[in-house]
Structures are given as C-alpha cells and as structure tokens.
Image (cartoon, rainbow, N blue to C red):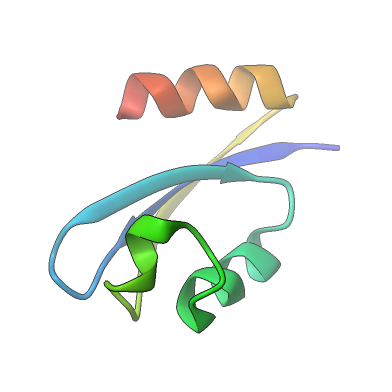
Length: 67
C-alpha cells in the first residue's frame, strides 16, 4: 500500500501538510470538520499537491522535511 504526502491550502491562505493512504477520505474529513484540528476552522481546503511514497515511514520523513 502506498502513502501520500499532501499539501492543502486553507481558506485563510495558510498551508497544511499531512500524510494518508486514503486521500479522498482524508480530504472529505478535512472539509467536513472531522479532519485535523488546524483545518477545522480554516475550511474549505483545496488540495495543491501530492507525492507518493512506498511506505508510511518514508511519507512521514517527507512530511517532516516539508514542514
């Protein structure tokens, strides 16, 4: 199963980075208010970019480097 690092733009112009292996589900969660605490008050969010990784560990490292 591949993992993705994703970058969102929030309604206030800020950015949020995360990882997931179920991108559509995660985007729905962010936009419904069930996602990360940071994005709950900054909806709607727009997906800007994704990058695929072979496992969660590599995705987590890439997310940390992006942040």
